[in-house]
Length: 151
Image 1 (cartoon, helix red, strand yellow):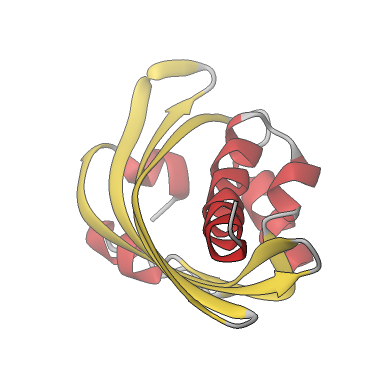
Image 2: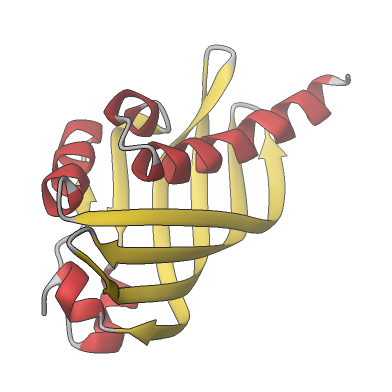
């Protein structure tokens, strides 16, 4: 496998770790997708239902924020499609579509299904790649996102 092809696979894997870490409730796997100084900007998506969350900055803050919001309360399933990658040495950019289903653990009838566009900036971290910044924009949604994420 060429180095460029290997990089592309590892870059996409960072987003897979992001989704599967949440779905499997695996903090370590989820954390492995981020650089220490990572940023997650969910504001464009939350604006669709009137939410205005802060930009999450730092791996520890991101992991703690997501897991404290979902832990024992929300079940998720993420599907990543259409990744487009541009590698530039030890940095890369990627766009992808992510469909994220969120269900209240106590009542799966209360849900939010989001089809989101991800703009991702990544950096090389040894043999793997990690997310430095991700901006998540919503294309469409169904359900009750305020029951999952708040107002």
